[in-house]
Length: 376
Image (cartoon, rainbow, N blue to C red; front, side, top):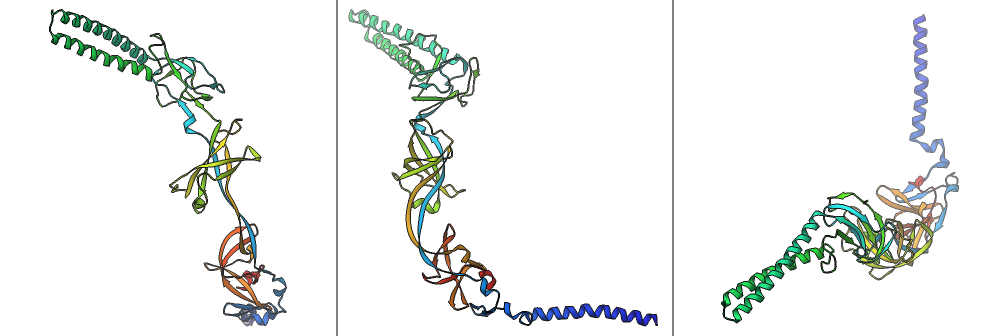
């Protein structure tokens, strides 16, 4: 008897869940039976929303219309010094820094002394020059003596020719050693031999930094001693996207705003548009020249550049009207009361809260701007 009661209890406990499961599946298979007011009717690419559906009150439409779009070609940029007015001063020879004649921030002229170096190779170059000058003077005296002897018939022309050959060879060595000193910044005709190597500025401008000190020995010809630059005119180099390159041309005006001066605009002119793209960023470099007489713009500053501005009139819809359907962009267009047609569109750029529609919708069409995803 107890076994029969146990079996009945188990059977009833299994039947009740199965009954609820059956009822639930029936409601899922026939949603209209559970709530007819939330259903929508699909006919191809058209959807009808019954007027008694709660969804009907949530739908909102707006007319697609032509909108004036303010367009700009903008690009991030950074400040650079003009390479023709920028110089990293490198040690011409290995040696020890004897004296610094300038400090950071000093204004210098082209050819002005920057520092003195005690360089063994420079001493050797001066010694070679002194020897070559002495030998040249000796051979010139020999030519004069041989020409005098030949004029009196004491020696032949062959001896005179040999003396002249020796003089020409000595002259060649003299000019070579003299040019060597001039390349190192020393004019041997104006400077006493034995003087240290003087490094001079190749450009006029300001000393931006000094990277050495008195007494330091330098033997790396690639390590700069200091930097001198003329920053009265600077370059701003912008990275323009591939799709915008055709808008930018040499000589075009350009407006820049700098992070250091957010409330000001600086006017310049495009100097150069690169002929090649950066393969990684797909951008082209555009260089713009800006006057900088007050020195407010400094290398490595960040900027944003406006290269071109113009207005167009384009058909737009609110961005919320766009609905993704698979790999297509679509909108729902109201074709009758409570009836909407899903159309694929070709969308353009987004401007604010609206998006340009290039095809698929015409001006005057009423598009659904809310809850479109619920109609799919």
